[in-house]
Image (cartoon, rainbow, N blue to C red; front, side, top):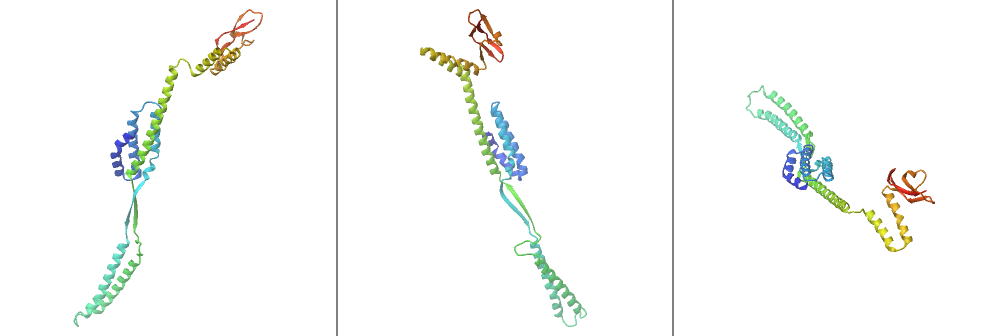
Length: 281
């Protein structure tokens, strides 16, 4: 799958950068992972590997809140304090001009607009006082090192390259898991083929080997003990060795004899007769 992710690298990083915000980056990454899974599924055999690939991609998609990985924080500030200082300076300058007007009027030649001199002086003085008051008020609103009435906006810009790096590391892990599954399946298939090609099962090989060992030993007691293993072997195969008795007489053929007993046990599996026994009566 890593090869298909590498094919998506350039377009995926560009799309994530264009998206800009984590909530918009997530669907971009999900679509890229869907494409990787689709291309990989065509190459994987049906069965365990394909199911595992789908499950691992599903887990990775569920973990995509990693898009909140932040590479840069941008702070935008609109400072209202500068405007307050500017307005305070304007008021102070206007007040100073108002104070200059009476002085200029006093410098005019005697007899020029004599009726206006007192009124202009009073009005300008009052205006100057008001303007100086406003200038001081505007300046008082601004504290050292802090904006007055300013607004601040923070923008977190996700790191597209880092997000891709996390996705790549996850896909590499998924590929390693798929290789392990493929190895297990190959090993199981090889063992299954070996067992299928064998004429005898491992249990049968062991049983017959023990019986032949007993035969070649020449020890009758040892050979008889080995023959007892047949009963346990058949029990492991869900086959019961049944001796002749009143409730299971139907499993036996009879032959006349002065001594009654089981000559050959019957073989029964799950209540079904496999081989009739032989009993004397």
